[in-house]
Image 1: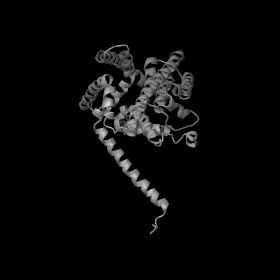
Image 2: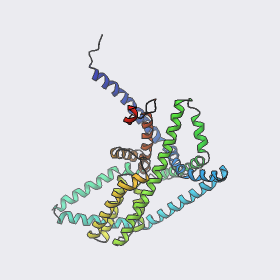
Image 3: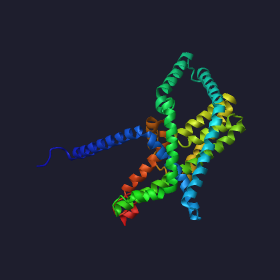
Image 4: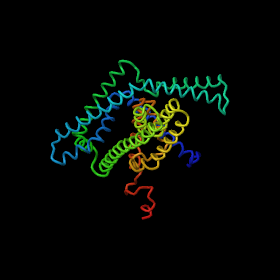
Length: 360
């Protein structure tokens, strides 16, 4: 007997309950990973370190160096480089944070005065109301954005533990990453499934390497180009602002906008409106250069995703794990897209998006 339920409703219901189950699984996995963040975040960060360090390790091994000496050399060099960079950045920020805050406060006052005296003609009461609303919004969302970084001794202990775990994980990834991957693949049944797992692993590793290396080069180019314009315009705090621009590149779309806005606000407070407008134009030009030329060349298709997906991923990352979550969100999404695309290939190996191959 034929069902009286329309076929379209049956199909919709079938898809709907599957999506509900999938959403519940993803939400549950997110909660578990968030609870295990002391272990999960260092593991992921160590993969990033391994992506950048293993090519050097492989070159040294190809020239006859042993596995352990090569690992120790690369690991110690990477650790020293990382420590030096962190020390330099911390020193620059510590020496300039008060001056940056003062510059931003002065810029805020100038903008407030302009809103009252300029074409908008806002009353002082209305301006104060808008400022209070903005401050309240920042206060309400600050815990989610920074991930509770100021949580006291427990947070400090968690950060130290995570850093030590990251060092241990990174050491073994550099030393035995290829062996560990081969051991994991042996648990997959031989044939098409093992080939798929190996292919996904290679593509994911390549995606991470391309994303991290390409993003670092993009951030360096942005920092250099904007950093050249800052002293020419007479803007102070050149090194801290350039560093802010560099790290902003690791938060696609959002980071570049926020770091550029801070630089313009500092210019507005210290050297005037004309120079701030010129710097604003420089920031826009650099961002266009980044989006149209640098990212396609340096990153390629490693982050080939719609901007809406990037914004959603960044939002989820900030909510789940604060700044570290925002940093990890896009590369994790990029790897997820690699996996989804691979499973979109039919058994014959022809991609569904390739009309010429399908026609053959």
